[in-house]
Picture 1 (cartoon, rainbow, N blue to C red):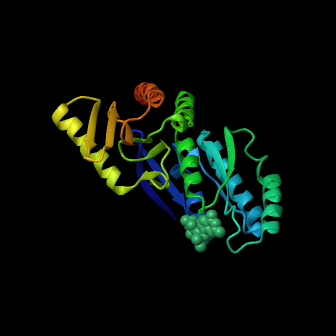
Picture 2: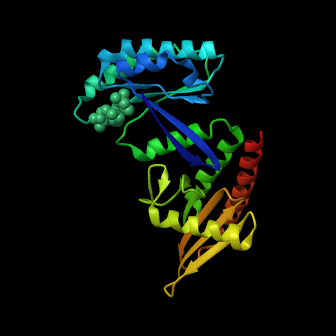
Picture 3: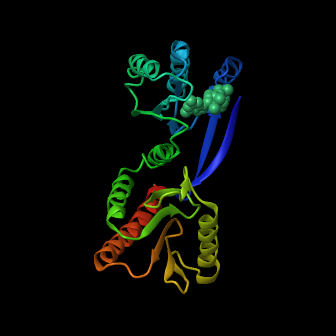
Amino acid sequence: MYETRRHPFLGLQVGIFDFGGQEQYRKEYMEKPEIFKGTDVLIPIVDLHDPKSFSQAKEYFKGLLDIYRKNNEKPKIFLFFHKFDTTDYQKELLDTNVKKAKEIFLDMFKEYDFNYMLTSIYQQDELAKVFRDILISSYAELKTHVEKAEAKLEEIKAKIIISDVSGNVIVHNVQGVSSGLTLRGDLRDFIDACNTVRENIFMSDSAVFKGLNEDGKEIELHIFKYIISVLIMKTGEIDRDSQDKLNMLLNDMKLFADLIISAHAD
Ligand SMILES: Nc1nc2c(ncn2[C@@H]2O[C@H](COP(=O)(O)OP(=O)(O)OP(=O)(O)O)[C@@H](O)[C@H]2O)c(=O)[nH]1
Ligand SMILES: [Mg+2]
């Protein structure tokens, strides 16, 4: 009927429930409203390549909203207009379907904290950002910090990846470093190892780690408050301006980590 997974993100365990869309499954779990209790975020997904399913999808979503009404809960809703791509599908039809889908679905979530996005499995980087934004949507303050960091990264002449200690990428300026939401394996292992050293040997909340070779290649890892990691990769000295901006970024990320901790406490 549904699959569940846990995904660590910014120091929280996010529980993900993936509900099967087939009729027999829907029938079964819709009769058990308690399954939906405690939902923070609901992501209804519309298949843009299958306009014939739109009215059925609408009925399904209405049923879900009924359940939330009965449970007396109001999750945040992010509607995905999915398969927004032309893989085995015509551009003209896709455009028609987007228009039609918007007419059908956009007015049904008015009473909710609601957003929609056009998504595709072939746009992994976009999807990763969408999920990141959904996961931090409850914390308005965090969002401004992420946006600030995003802007600053463009101006610094070093490769930088900001992630949580589990390797969920928050922002970065390096091509090919992340596949979707998570950092590539070797760097993830590095962060994990440093984080263990931080905890077991340094016994402190924050720590800095460095590695370098004879060619002047350097890698620097800052861990802030056991949650945020900033990985910096440079080849040789970086200019003064970049270094200043980098220091500002590090300060801001330290604050960011503090904010996450106080948000968790709330
Ligand atoms: N073109 C395109 N195809 C996609 C996209 N996402 C998924 N698919 C394809 O759609 C088909 C169904 O994908 P699933 O992920 O199984 O769909 P689902 O809604 O989870 O199905 P149920 O769990 O049975 O409800 C697969 O063949 C996928 O490859 C997308 O963004 N674009
Ligand atoms: Mg599925």
